[in-house]
Image (cartoon, rainbow, N blue to C red; front, side, top):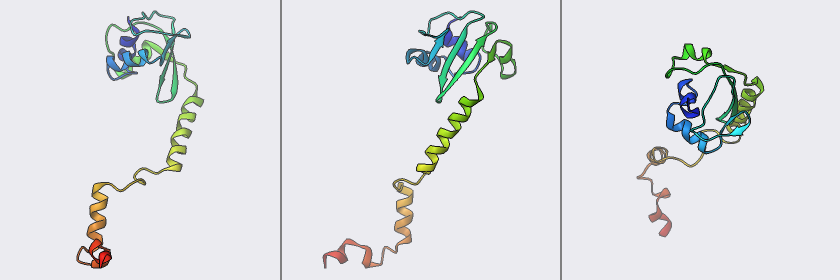
Length: 133
């Protein structure tokens, strides 16, 4: 089975196209070699798949006949990803939130309109006409 199809079948990619793009970008390695999407996967192979700044390490146990349900994924692979990888990804996420909270940037159109509604449009101290006079 092709590696892009295998990643799709064991639910690491939502679509086969996402799996193909990951292979083309070099995010997928089999036995420590960067592979093309057409590379065949065999039982016993070790796959490293980089997704969301986490290197997932998988051991292939068997080849699924088609896309399998989430409960049956463990029949076809063993996830040997260390817990430190997930903790590191969590720390990266927290550090990004520390520097800039979501929505703390420029005001959106909705924010601008609410600011304009808050500032009375009849009050001439905030309009450009009063500055010209």
